[in-house]
Length: 381
Image 1 (cartoon, helix red, strand yellow):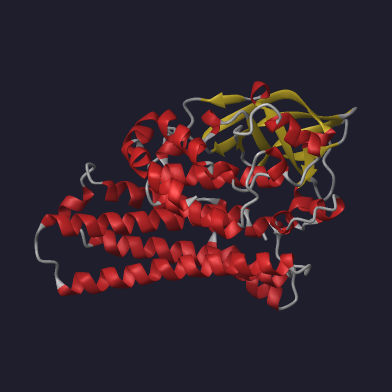
Image 2 (tube, rainbow, N blue to C red; image 1 turned 30 degrees about the vertical axis):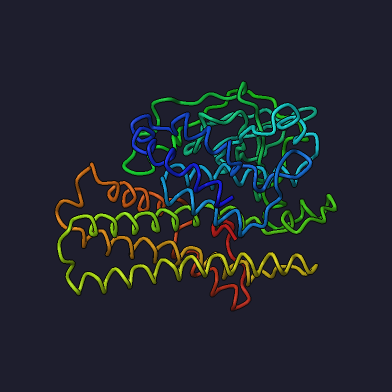
């Protein structure tokens, strides 16, 4: 996959600025991603996917993000969704990929809607923000609070992940006006009285705690991975890839200026490279260790899940801080819009705004788990 990405790199890089202007990925960039098959890496084999090792998937996301932040972000977010379909009723996979194995699925999972119980399923209503890559997707995962027939939610409320075809929701075209990750086209979604059959729903908690995989008797290690080691890592890997691309852009710029680079600047750049690599190494090592554990038939402990999330958050913030330090050494001309460095810098900071990168709660949850407590659901562990 990394070889395929290197082959399409020039095409993606040439469309990065146009994707920003469009407020979504350029169609050519989407075509190149489909050609490479990045989005199918976690897709089940029986529906034309690769069922790749999660580390290979994350390295591929980093590789794309180092070329164009928005394209890498969409690769990570949209690339995770086939993994969850692999945990659901087989009817879902057949519906989505029975005719086209390159069909993409959008999200978000934030429970911004209400799913009212009716005979055979639910009726969904709501509005959701941040549907990355949504213009290029024909299906969508949405989070919703389940209610009974009268519209009353349980206590505590049950959150569902539900799947809808493109005909059942509306994309709000003017809802993505941001300073970074502009090309992701992470627009708002509106749903009005859409019927969702039961087989296209799954409890969020069943995905998070691994119950969905166990209940279906799924043997493949990929689908036994905790949700918290798949979805947040895809977001984190995109940020790390953006930082790698940003640092490379800074180095290329300084090299091309033809001036002598101060010794102090060289030292800082070396430190930045080491920080970004440390973040990358830590994230991939944790995901690899988790995969090895589930492959051996063992269960991932809550402590391991909490610590992996802690490290993922810290790694992203560490890498963005390193990119900051490098970008500041490029001088006055480094801030010109003609330089790609500023786009990587903006994209990296925008990536930290995602919920999976909230630091305090995640750090606290790791320590509270060590003390015998239970992390809150909002810690995404």
